[in-house]
Amino acid sequence: MNEIQEELARKQVRAAEHVVKFFINKAAPTMKDLIVGVIKWLGDQNNKILPGKQSLKQLTKDGSRLASLPLNSDNIKTFESIAKKYGMRYSMEKDSSKDPPQHSVFFATKDADTMTAVFKKYLSNEIKREKSKKPPFKKVLNEAKEKVKNQIRDQNKNRTQEIGGR
Image (cartoon, rainbow, N blue to C red; front, side, top):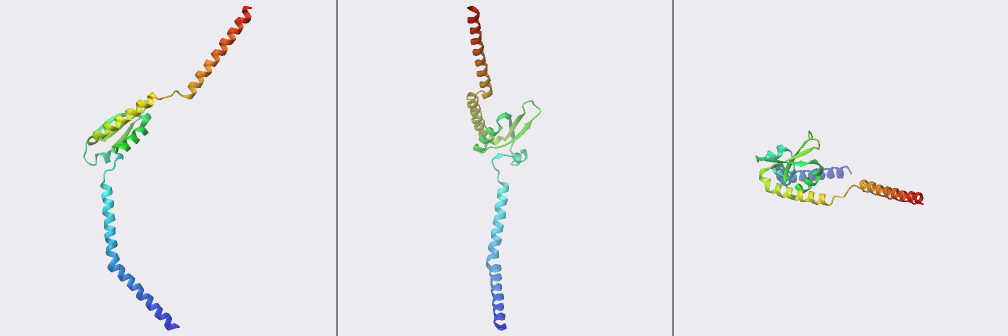
C-alpha cells in the first residue's frame, strides 16, 4: 500500500513538472506578448482624442487654438446632446456673476465647421421650441377662472337690473 502511494506521489510530481515546463516554454512568451499588446493598446487609448465635453486643458493638449461663444444657461442639455451627436470637442465655463448665469462654450478652431453646424441645429431647435411654447397650465386655468367670474358677475348685474327695473 505504501509503495502504491509513493508511486502516485512521484507521478503527480512529474505531471506538475511537465505543466510548469510547458508554461515556461510555451505559454509564458505568449502571455508576455499578450501583456505587452494590452499595455500598448491602453497607451494608444490614452493618447486618442475623444469627442464630447472636455476640460480646457484637454482641449489645448493638441496645440490647437480655442474660440468661444456665449450660451444661455436654460438649454445646456439640448446643446450638449447636439454637440455629442456631431462629435464636437468642447468645454464649458459657467459665468455666475451675471443675473441669469451664462455659459461660454470653448472649442478648437479646427472644429469651427462642426461648431457652425452644431449651432445652426441648436438655434433651429430653439426657434421651434419658442414657436410651440404653450403658456403654463396655471396661467390658463387662472384666466379661465377670471372669465367665469366675470360672466357670473355680469349675470348677477343683469338680474339685479331686471329686478330693479320692474
